[in-house]
Image (cartoon, rainbow, N blue to C red; front, side, top):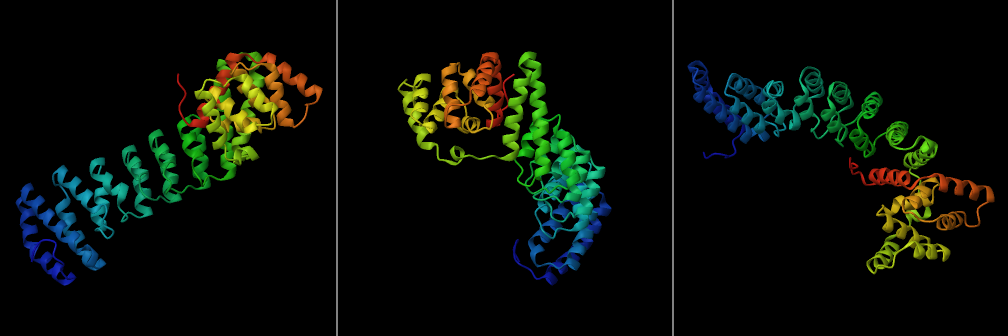
Amino acid sequence: MGPGARLTPGTAMNNLVSFVSEVEEAVASGDPVRRVAALRRMTNLFIEQAPHLKELHITVFDEVILRLARDIEFRARIELSDRLADIANAPRRVVRDLAFDDDIKVAGPILERSSRLDDADLVELARTRGQDHLFAMTKRPSLSETVTDVIVDRGDTRVVRSVAGNEGARFSVSGFSQLLERARQDEALQAVLKARADIPASQMRRLVEIAREKVRETMRAEFEVTEAVLVDETIDEVADLTAQGRASRTLTDDLTAAVAAVDRFAAEGGLNEDLIAQWLSDGRIEEAIAGIAQVGALPVLMVARAYHSTHYDPLLFIVRSLRFGWPTFKLILTCKAGRQPPAEVLKSAFEAYQHLSIPTAQKVVRFTAVRESGVKPAA
């Protein structure tokens, strides 16, 4: 019967029994070549017949393969691990033996892919093995809360980022709390956590607060102390928008047409502050928003969010960063309110406009735009 031919479980077991003497001789001889050859024959036979074998039969294969797989050359154990990793009913003891191997090249395929490891195995591995083993475990298609609790507790930065980015990993309340604590000093982890669909609202609020504090620290280190309060207010506004996921009419409108029209003006060299002011006067708000985004090379939704913010600070930073004049900013405020703003509002806005330096405005806008795009800012 040729290789790969289907056998009945009984025939497969008969073939296994017929190999017993060969196995005994290979083990007794101490010859590594004979031992590896016998192992490959046993493994081939098992893989060919695995779909048709009952658990009782698998136990017999388990005993034989485990005996051959110990104390063999490194490359043969790597090969065995890779071949068994995707077999749904692979021999359990062999799988565990490979998973607990100190060398990650042997353990890796099993840790990443084998469904024969249960939660008890994974928890023990996570508690007793090193960072390479933990990292391999984070690549599994799914991970329970029991397992991720240990991984997050013991993992280094690389491990924690990887498990946080695994959509098949589930986290307990305690696990999420630990992730957030780790995220305080890890902006990359913050970004990964923000992308998770299952993060609880309370944890998202904490995450936003962590991001807010980090940006505030960075900005305070760079900006003039006299502008710190205004910077803080802008950070708070942007953070609140992120936490609440606030939408608006323009945010939900299709801005494609406006962006396309503005792109044509920009290509022809006719896009400038005067044209944007005219659009505002004509009530063409979408074109004005798209025009501001085009001039500043900013995400159009970032400008739209600023326009519909409950405060004028985000818009002030954008307008000042573009070196637009006070009349344009006043016109934007009028469009936002739908009427001439009260005198005290205009007075406050004018003072803020004069107080805010263009370099500070440009730095704040750059920080915000970088967060919008998810790209790390240049040093």
